[in-house]
Image (cartoon, rainbow, N blue to C red):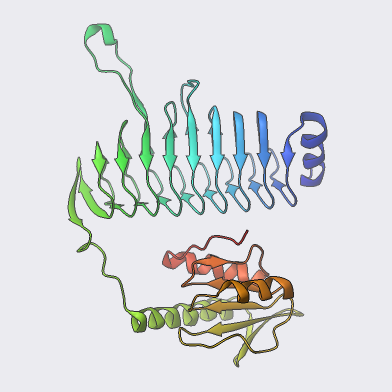
Length: 330
């Protein structure tokens, strides 16, 4: 059934609250009592999402052949579950899988959410990771251990591939876990931990070397060069200037780049243009851009327009390769 008919059927027949432009892949299934899917969310081919309470945020996605089954499912805005991810396990009344805004779970990861699994905003769970909230198989009455404990992973955490997180583990915000590590107990915020079991080998302030203004400007310059090299490879024609133009077929997209020391926006921007700003945009500027229908990506203020053109969305995705993820306006 096409997405349009699926949206109508879910709304009318089942009472689900389905937003605009929500996409359902062929063979996908959505089953729940209390279901809310916000605008522009997507459930991929042959993916299954089932639970008592389901919330999928704006622009979130669940990839092809993934299986997400839990009593309560909360997927944040711009969060992504990639292909062939499994979320499930024996259910309890408190079973919860909560994925923060702009967080991603990569392919072939297995998450047991018998007890709550809560993952904060802007975190990344690499492929083939294992997150378990229970450890039980052999008879407890024979002396074997049985464990049921929640797992909490903070915001801006990175778990590279093949990390195993044990029941009861807590990983503080801003931390990085080495590949192939086993996480037991608590990892403090802003730490680098590696090994089996994972041990903290570096913590803030030594762990992070924050670049100065000149360093950040240089980084953005490299990102833009790489972005335009990527577009040129995709046969996009690029014209340099105060307002850079990107032509795809008969469509032309325009972008204004504001450096860290740039003054107020003064060029004649029009609806559908994009502003990439290295300096924070104040509320007056954002309000003006909203009114005009101009999209923006504010790297320093860490915000972006609620919607975007094809250029805005492509650039936002490309910046994600450098760990830059921006909350949507509104």
